[in-house]
Each structure stands twice: as C-alpha cells, then as structure tokens.
Length: 150
Image (cartoon, rainbow, N blue to C red):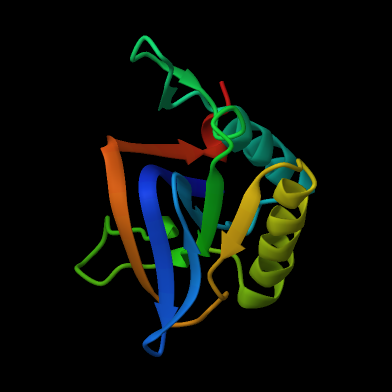
C-alpha cells in the first residue's frame, strides 16, 4: 500500500461537476492498494496515519496529529500510485490490486479508520473520475509505502 498524505487547510472531491466530499483542516489521503496488501497492512497504515505528528503545536513544531487538532480526513483511492515507469513511456499498473480486491480493501481501510472515532472521515468514490481540489498547508506532503515499515 502506498499513501500520499497532504496536510490541508481544505480539500474536496467533485464528480461530474458535483461536490461529493469536502473537509476543512486535516489530511488528504491518496491511497493505492497493491495485490499483496492485507488487513494487517490496513491496520498498520491506519495507525501510522492517525498518529502522524505533522501539525504544528503552539511552539511551531510539527508535534500534533490529526486527532490532536480535531481535524478531518478525506480519503481518495488512486491506483496510479503503483505506476511503474521503468520501461517505455506508458506506465504499467501491474502492482496495483485488481478492482475486486482493491474495493474490498479500500472499504476495509475506510471502516478501520472510522473505528478510531472522533475524526470526521469523507471519501471519494472508488473508480470514479474525480477532480480533487486542495489547499496544501505548509506545504506538507508525505509518501508512506507499507513495504518500508522499518
């Protein structure tokens, strides 16, 4: 699983010119699910995301989590995070999970993060053609790959 996390002042998803999700301060999480991902991968990633200290405390240090600031999370599926561009000019997505598996794990990811409580969760729609807007705060953008847990 690869996630791109952006600390945002606000973010939204539009589908067919209609706003389907939006948050104020919090995290925009783009999630790419791989064939080898499991529920254990989801549990590890959810804990990493909700406890990630990337919001500033009163001293200006990144020392607070999304839970600490009572922020929100917008989750958007993005299989293109698994693009392999080593050969030729057309990306290969062979490492991305097939839709049947990816949808189930995406739904499990959402339900697992919702179980953490006290965090507003909004989502895009799996497989939809989405337009994602955001105001990156900082800017702070992190990439986390579950293959690199150490």
